[in-house]
Length: 72
Image 1 (cartoon, helix red, strand yellow):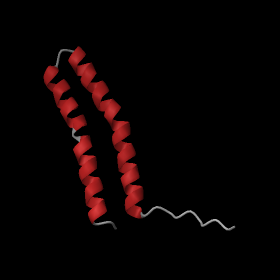
Image 2 (cartoon, one colour):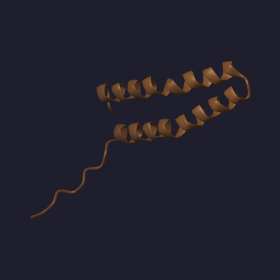
Image 3 (cartoon, rainbow, N blue to C red):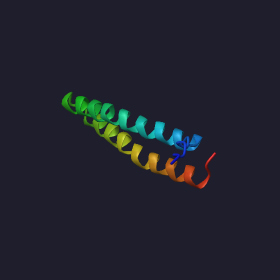
Protein backbone atom coordinates (compact mmCIF):
# COMPACT_ATOMS: atom_id res chain seq x y z
CA UNK A 1 0.00 0.00 0.00
CA UNK A 2 1.57 3.27 -1.14
CA UNK A 3 1.23 6.35 0.98
CA UNK A 4 0.58 9.68 -0.63
CA UNK A 5 3.40 12.20 -0.43
CA UNK A 6 2.90 14.93 2.12
CA UNK A 7 1.55 18.03 0.46
CA UNK A 8 3.57 21.17 0.92
CA UNK A 9 1.68 24.04 2.59
CA UNK A 10 0.86 26.97 0.35
CA UNK A 11 2.69 30.27 0.58
CA UNK A 12 -0.21 31.89 2.40
CA UNK A 13 -0.32 29.05 4.94
CA UNK A 14 3.42 29.38 5.56
CA UNK A 15 3.13 33.15 5.94
CA UNK A 16 0.22 32.76 8.35
CA UNK A 17 2.22 30.27 10.41
CA UNK A 18 5.19 32.67 10.63
CA UNK A 19 2.94 35.59 11.51
CA UNK A 20 1.18 33.54 14.20
CA UNK A 21 4.44 32.41 15.79
CA UNK A 22 5.71 35.98 15.61
CA UNK A 23 2.70 37.13 17.62
CA UNK A 24 3.27 34.34 20.16
CA UNK A 25 6.95 35.28 20.54
CA UNK A 26 6.39 39.05 20.73
CA UNK A 27 3.49 38.98 23.22
CA UNK A 28 5.53 37.96 26.31
CA UNK A 29 8.01 40.76 25.61
CA UNK A 30 5.17 43.28 25.42
CA UNK A 31 3.62 42.10 28.67
CA UNK A 32 7.03 41.90 30.34
CA UNK A 33 7.82 45.47 29.30
CA UNK A 34 4.41 46.57 30.60
CA UNK A 35 5.11 44.94 33.98
CA UNK A 36 8.47 46.72 34.07
CA UNK A 37 6.89 50.12 33.42
CA UNK A 38 4.13 49.50 35.96
CA UNK A 39 6.79 48.63 38.55
CA UNK A 40 8.74 51.76 37.62
CA UNK A 41 5.63 53.87 38.28
CA UNK A 42 4.83 54.77 34.67
CA UNK A 43 1.27 53.49 34.34
CA UNK A 44 0.58 55.29 31.05
CA UNK A 45 3.33 53.46 29.16
CA UNK A 46 2.41 50.23 30.96
CA UNK A 47 -1.21 50.41 29.81
CA UNK A 48 -0.11 51.48 26.33
CA UNK A 49 2.04 48.35 26.04
CA UNK A 50 -0.80 46.15 27.34
CA UNK A 51 -3.19 47.58 24.74
CA UNK A 52 -0.66 47.32 21.91
CA UNK A 53 0.11 43.72 22.86
CA UNK A 54 -3.59 42.82 23.01
CA UNK A 55 -4.04 44.36 19.55
CA UNK A 56 -1.93 41.49 18.18
CA UNK A 57 -5.00 39.24 18.56
CA UNK A 58 -7.38 41.10 16.19
CA UNK A 59 -4.46 41.82 13.84
CA UNK A 60 -3.72 38.10 13.57
CA UNK A 61 -7.39 37.18 13.16
CA UNK A 62 -7.88 39.83 10.47
CA UNK A 63 -4.76 38.69 8.64
CA UNK A 64 -5.95 35.09 8.76
CA UNK A 65 -9.39 36.08 7.45
CA UNK A 66 -7.86 38.10 4.61
CA UNK A 67 -5.62 35.20 3.57
CA UNK A 68 -8.56 32.80 3.61
CA UNK A 69 -10.54 35.10 1.32
CA UNK A 70 -7.70 35.94 -1.05
CA UNK A 71 -4.85 33.41 -0.83
CA UNK A 72 -1.80 33.95 -2.99
